[in-house]
Length: 513
Image (tube, rainbow, N blue to C red; front, side, top):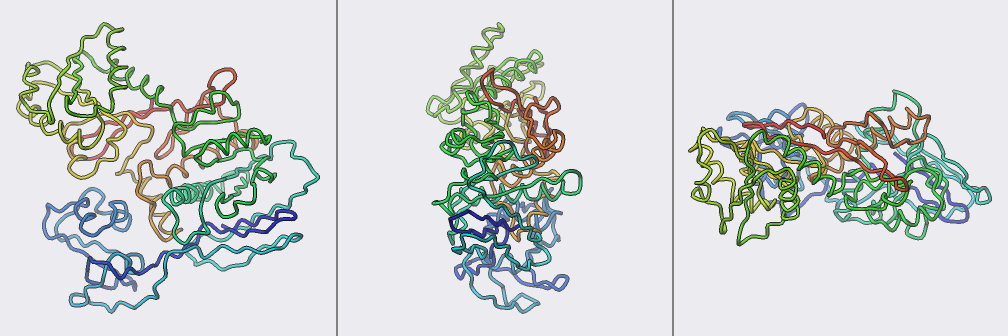
């Protein structure tokens, strides 16, 4: 999508966010795979040698992410099987995989070495004209759409422009190597564009304008009516831009989806915080835990030699349990939890809710095996493991243990890695942009997709003006938005929290509080 901006008396910037050259060849690649031809396309291929091989193990072996493997081979999302063949297009993976010429049945064509760089940025001095660039896109890329604005410096901005979204983020498109923050912002924006395309035939046209804060640091987007008058502004992570925007007299609401801790919404009626705050998470999570005990005895684990980084949560839990007159058991352990530390819980017919005082993967590994062994040795004792948002990042053995223990966690985001909806968006993302989303939790591409769908549907339901407080809210693929007013003089904040249950073997079940 091309965004042509004309700044009167200033320089013209033509910025295209969707076409990046990704086909870099890394001469230091160490993994070798044979090559074959599938449907006329050269592909690396790999055949699991045993039924015990896992996608996680293969990701480490090949230096790929799990999401990349599954995106190109959806059939292994639920595990690999012997004699299954996995394929990876040579053009997409030649930067990390070398052809194994001896075992290949296809000749791999050489490709010029291109460092990844934006191919779509052009600056020209042209003070009095608007230029619409013509450029052909590959058939599998999004067609260019030109959005033009001409600024009349003498005409003040007075009201919201309906059905308009301004995205102001640091894309760093001038740099040949974008920092991770810029890549996350770009993934977010690409996800938003897919949302716009998904909803493009279902209602009023919504105008989306993007501004790269890094490409033109001498140009202030807050002097542009496309930003000042936007019904919604999606702001960068730092709070400085929001504070400046409020002083500049923006007309609509401003949202900061990439900053989970910003509190400007508490005192500014135009600010929307789409991420539930920590204190609200603690309140809802403890409320849920207490109401779901059903006679189970809370057991708080703490490592006498560890950081216990969730002490704030467990302290609040102790306070609430005391108020509810519910007795809890405290079990300290040194270094790693042992089965003997749990001996006092070996009472047939009893139920226990286990709450550790730390959320790191290292601390989880120090307690999980002892809990699993105790559970297997005492089938008449019911253990409920309750944990933290960080656990959604676990992969491999740690993730398997979450399923073994049928753990329950609270989280802002629902990382349903088996979801068909997630796979479909990942597939669209690769088809549109030539590379998968950056691996992160939350996925910034999905974050952009969910927020984009929510904003566009909200604008269409409210005559083009964003109306945050919606009784029904919006439930997306990874995020749920239930925005509520933050006090009489405040803005709006998300009130939705996921409770995620890990099912035996694989998969999760999520509910929203």
